[in-house]
Length: 126
Image (cartoon, rainbow, N blue to C red; front, side, top):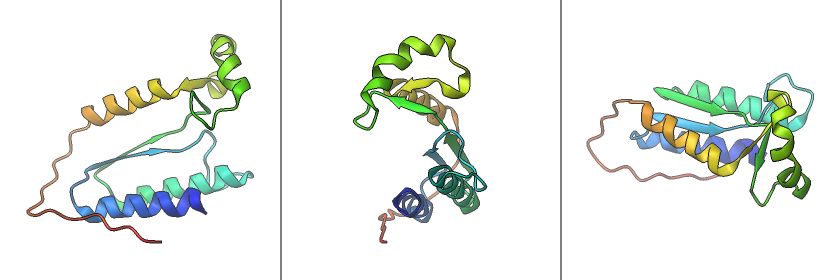
């Protein structure tokens, strides 16, 4: 339940802090509460739970393969960039730097007014 519990606790702590107006969630392609696969189902449950928290704005990213991380299989890092031009969109990989840049641009373009009168420490416990 690490994929759900830690992410949900973090999102909830951000909301409790009262200073976060836009929450970005990195999920996975195929995330769905009714999915057959455990990982896809858990990520679907997380997406719904985060949306239900009620942030003023939430963006969910669902890449199929994130390339260039320590978790990326070596074959994917080597071959997916070459195969991307002929793969269907649902199977394409995205470089971690490109994903991060997209997330940054979206975060900067979403303007949500958040008012706070004091500093709120973020507390997160499981």
